[in-house]
Image (cartoon, rainbow, N blue to C red):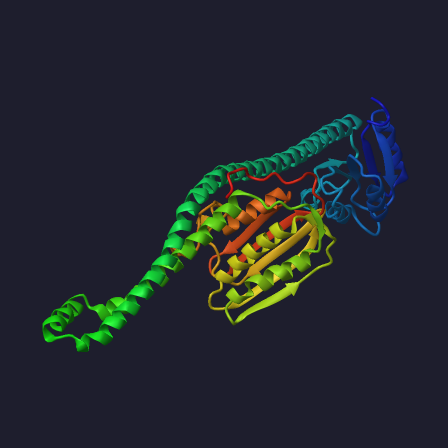
Length: 429
C-alpha cells in the first residue's frame, strides 16, 4: 500500500502514553495524526480530515462526548467514524458515546488485535460509503446533464417541427394569397364601378320623381304602385350601405392576404447594428392607438449593446408582441417592457397584467392560424410570424403565464448573427 493511499487515523487523548501505544500498533498500516485535547483534535481534523478518529472520553476542558458532537456538527467531518477508547465501563457511558455520535466503543485495557480489527472494519465501511457517495453524486450530475440535454433536444425538436410547419403553411399561404389577389382586384374594381352606377341610377330616379306630378293619372298611378311594391325609398337608401359594407369586407380580405404574404416571405433586408430600445419605442408608437386609455406603460430599459439584425422585421416582431399584450388588457392594465443582457445576448420581456393564457393552449400559441380571438378579428398569424422572425435571428421566445394573472413573453436575441437569415420560400405577388 502506497504512502499516499494509506488511511489517516487521528488519535485524540490527553495521555501521551496512550497515544504512543496506539500509534505503534497502527503505524504499519495507517498514517497517524494526534492531539492532546478535544479542541486541538477538532482543529487538527479540520486541517487534515482523517478516515477515522480514536477518541478518549476523560479529557480536561472538553470531554470526548462533546468533542464527538462537535465533530458531527462539522460539514466535512460529520461522517468520519469515531471509536471511543475509554476505561469507563458503565452502560450509561457507552450509551452517551453512541448518543453523541460515536460509531464504536472499546474499553481499556484493550487488545491490540481487537482495535486493529475494528479500525480496519470502520475505515473500510467509511471509504466504501464515501466512494458510493461520490458515484451517486456523479450519477446525479450525469442525470442532470442528461435531463438538460433531453430538454434541449425536446425544445429543438419542437422548434424544428414548428419551423417545418411554418415552412409548409407558408408555401400554402403564399399560393392561396396569390390566387385570392387576382379575383380580389376585379371584385374591388367592380364594386367601385357599381357604386358609380347606383349613384347614376339614383339620379335618374330623382329626375323621374320630379317629373311624376306632370304625368296623367293613367301613367302615374301604376308607377306609384310599382314604387311602393319594391319599396324604392328603402332600396335607394340601402344600396350604398351594402356597397360600403362590401368594401369593408374586401379590405379585411386584403389585410388577411397581406398577413399571409408577410408570413410566407421575409423582407429583403440587410443585417445592421441596431439599437433595440429605439426599435421598441418605434413599435410601441405604431400600436399605441390600439391600447385602452387606462393602459400604463412601464419601461425598465437596461444597458444594451448594439445588436445585429434586420430592423423592419424586428419592429414587426415587437409590434406583434405589443399588440398581443394590449389585446389581453381590453379594460386597461399595466404593460412592462424590461430589457437586460443575458447569456451573451439580450433579453426583452413583454409583461402584461391581462387575462393570461391557460396551460392547455400555451403549447399552440405560436402555431400558424391559431387564435383565441373571435372569428373575423384576426387570422392568428401575429405570434407565428414573430416566432419565425426571432428564430431567423438565432433567438428564441419563452412564455410564462397564469390565467387571470397576465403573461410574460421574453424574447432572447444573440448580439451577433452568424449567418444570413433563410427566408421561407413561396410565390409572391
